[in-house]
Every structure is written in C-alpha cells, then in structure tokens.
Image (cartoon, rainbow, N blue to C red):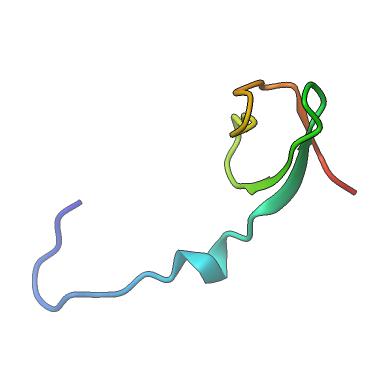
Length: 51
C-alpha cells in the first residue's frame, strides 16, 4: 500500500473484533478473525463459534 503526504493511523482493533471459537477436534478455545479459521493448537479447520 502506498500513500503520499502525511502518515495516517488505522486502528484495526476498533473495526474488527475477534470472535470466540472452539475446536471440535481438540476442544481448544481461542479467539480469531477472518473467514478460514483454524485451531492454533492442532491446525484443524473443524471449528465452530463458541456460544
């Protein structure tokens, strides 16, 4: 990404809130953002949003 002139700040924390997920394979609970969520522990894509 290129910009000219003054620098600018983008605060992504305010725009995208991580959601809570649980892995159906290893029961690891974690937070993540995005579309292709994978468990950070076992790398499984068999995850669901926690309630």
